[in-house]
Image (cartoon, rainbow, N blue to C red; front, side, top):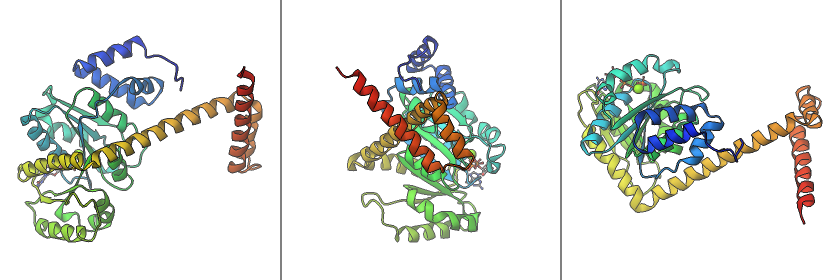
Length: 333
Ligand SMILES: Nc1nc2c(ncn2[C@@H]2O[C@H](COP(=O)(O)OP(=O)(O)OP(=O)(O)O)[C@@H](O)[C@H]2O)c(=O)[nH]1
Ligand SMILES: [Mg+2]
């Protein structure tokens, strides 16, 4: 990571265009950030997101109706005059095969709306969820002036935690018939949900699931300034989605007023800082190791099992630290 490097003129122009509201420039910048290389790093370094956008995660089991809900929520937000960014997980996971095509159909009306930017992201690299670059994409959408950013994830496992790291409000979508899967996921979902939507409430069992979640919530100790609502929705028929939209806005306001949003943002900044630092350190070390036969030898001996990974890392770390302090002594007047 050559931190001193400047942006290429071409990318600098894209950033200018994006700030003027150019959707193609935003799309291109997202691609650059998704690549997760030097240029992507430079883009994220040069943009300054306002942090104004409300980031909402919509998560839940495959096929729960998340995209249909996102589509409906987008319509409500557009009626309020908000500019919307949508990020959805690409169907490289076996759960959501064909989702992109499906999402295109479900979100058809918004594809031609200039106030809406829809982006599917590949799930490569992270199990079942969005890649780590999702945070960068959220920042780009924020910098481009979106007021609401909806992030849809297929919520199984580690994913919910990733979503929570990057958003302000988490909507967990469940369906009546999900049965045992839901049972297994519930404990984890209780921890992260700010709002529950029991979707497909046109089917039987929705009412009892709402009651069940409410009684489970009574046992969980969460922020006392926010009571987690459990709503029955029918995304398909646009029933209950208006109330969900209102609760999302209400949650935002509560978080701002109580200082919870500031806390969440501080946590997000810390984790971003750690991630950037980790990446820099690893890149610097990798470069130093490959250009120094003595250090490379530690790595080979470690691979051969002659040195433990701990010993190899310690030896390399102390060699490089000593070298750094010698350099500092030499450069001191
Ligand atoms: N009966 C009923 N079907 C619904 C409702 N909402 C969505 N669906 C249907 O459920 C199916 C899945 O909807 P999606 O919105 O693609 O669900 P998803 O959670 O985004 O799915 P993945 O992204 O593949 O995990 C579609 O056929 C929808 O038409 C609802 O309220 N009731
Ligand atoms: Mg979907």
